[in-house]
Image (cartoon, rainbow over all chains, first blue to last red):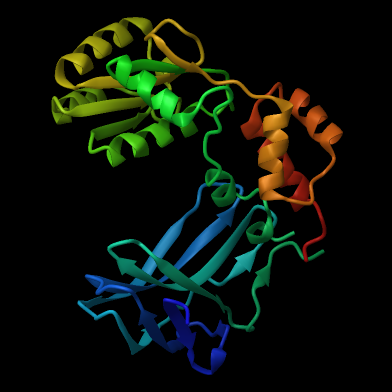
Length: 122
Length: 191
């Protein structure tokens, strides 16, 4: 079993604006972490400097070496997931363990069509 | 190609750390300590000076030393107010890492160097030309270095001659070579 896991309900990979993302986190570590932090954010990737917007986060203090918890995040109405040649905007949920900084990330699409917006499809 | 699939996107390129030529990182670090943490990383644009400075910062902090990184460039000049705030924050156990010393005028540099070294325990700079502090290392690049970095980012890249031409086209500036390769990948059809 992976040490840190994020499972989204129904294995969804695409969400509508303002929809609620529900899921479960699981952890199975060698020692008791001080805390686990689950963050909802978007970030950009491409040629330029990376930009990040943290939308929401949950902190689980002294969670024990192993366990699981359900979570729910309300998404914003944007920005939509998109990709061009110079920049992509990606939504993700990330679970981070402290100390140590070990983490796992689950990416998903936020879009009214269910698909990433392609800026240069022709 | 989507930007997030581009093998030369910034987050992947940033993960490539400095690769010393003819000495180990430990030797660089030992030399820096022997120079009492007063030294210059010298080299042309795109040769890895900033990357090495960042790597030194991590190595110094891993050894329990306090550091203060300062980036100076055309869009982020070290004006009077910034200099004053920097000096006010320094303590005797701090090593100042200053990237872009060339962007500081000579007279200002002389005063700033004296002021920093009277307040902090060290000053390491990056510069294009030697002369401002004793040189710690001269950063250099080769076509083989570019080829090695490119293969780490795109393992199927095997056209060494094309990379050699790219290297010479950008006059050994590895950063610009990697930006050029980003554009070349981006020009494929969006998949």
